Length: 167
Image 1 (cartoon, rainbow, N blue to C red):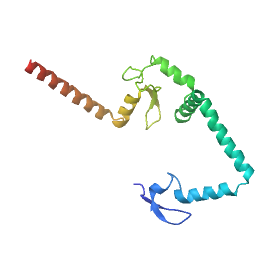
Image 2: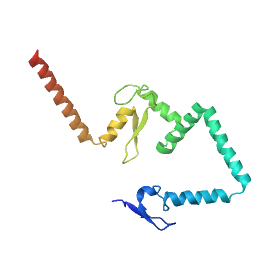
Image 3: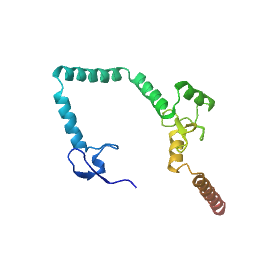
Image 4: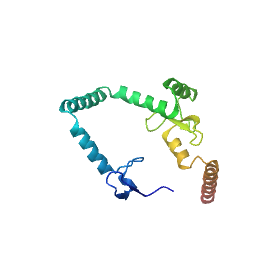
């Protein structure tokens, strides 16, 4: 069970956990004050250089939107799943560029998500957003998925018999 409150190491106040970063030991307001003081302590020429650098980065991202989106995606799949772009593309091609479950393109227009076992980290395949979300919401539990199939099948049979009865 996780704690709901934490004591700030700076102000020593006992505060709700929402006032802290996930692994932080100082509350958000103390951290903001500390950062503001640090920024003010820097020589003006260093502050200007850093500000110019931030503005240049922002301008570059705006001017190269597709490239930065691609680089961000590549970095994400490399960090989270250990896959190169080539490995992702190979998986995609082996699935005929469709979701491994519903056999459709991702209807959100996004790329297919890398599906993995949350216990082992092993990559299973590429899924559209709807299929990937569905598996996650059903907690990757086979018995829950089987119960969903039984439920849907039962109601499909009931609906068919109602149609025959009213016809």
